[in-house]
Length: 399
Image (cartoon, rainbow, N blue to C red; front, side, top):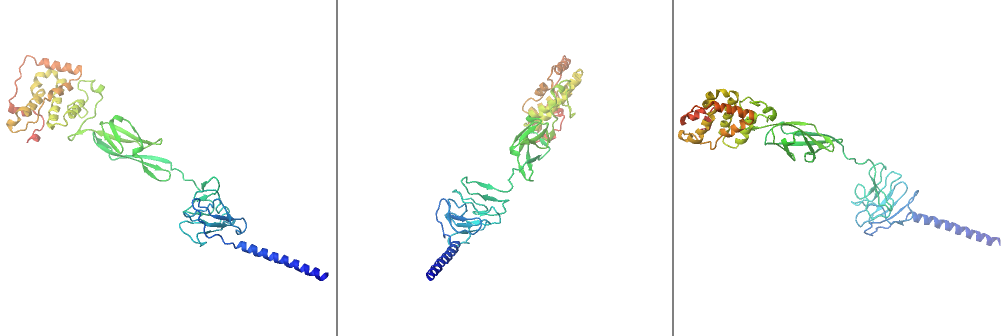
């Protein structure tokens, strides 16, 4: 019986050893298992992934979504371990790379791609998922929510620090244009041109018109402008608007109350013509021959004499008050007879007179002057002498 028992023990031991050897070989073969060479399923871009937490992958387990960003219609098979080491197979080559990158292992405990149920191709830095230090870049998270989380610092919208307003010129003639420019400065040192987007604050809004970058002067006054954007105002800029016609700069429009408070009114440039009348003359005759303005201004100076010295009516009647009338008559009727051009085609003195004696007090002075002329006759000058009554340089009007 003992030999038989020994034989049985030996046989049993052999079976155990054989079983152990077979198990070791099974583990070795499993450890060296070769991943499928290509998955051609399209649409969901799913592959086959396997992972464990302490050793190399042993079994390729199908997943609903690999989470691995691959190229169109080419899904690799990814295996990795808890240290983020992984290999992507594309086609028959485990190391082949292209524009469709696989999953690159990194040195982070949170690296790798978590398989999930997703039809999206989530990518970072191209078409793959890059393992990194976990502090920056974009990380693709697999899962039912299909979320993509951007790691690192968020991109903040720059904050407006200041607006700077500038214009081509600090002074501008009436009815002419200048260019405006508004520059915005931000806290990231960037700048932006905002002229078309700002709101304007103007001290005299009816003095200018702004369209885009263009400002048109409408009224000759001083104005201050500021631009506003997102509640922030620019630096103030002052624009001096003047009015110049034929090289002559006109006085500003006088205050009506102050101007009419006295007989003579306001003559700020001391040229003998009240400012409101001077401005009216240039506005009325600016588009006519320049001689209209010369004759009208002469009439304005003559009517000032009436207001100043109405008692000298007979002395100033022909030589001063009627002088612009004789001058106009020459250029309206007789100039051709003396080789001069006909330049005047309408009465000039009468409209100026109505502007000059525009208040009751001024009108009363004129009627006082007119009454003092009663009872005398006043002959007209010879036609060849009428030109001499012009008090301006007539040589500039030669043909």
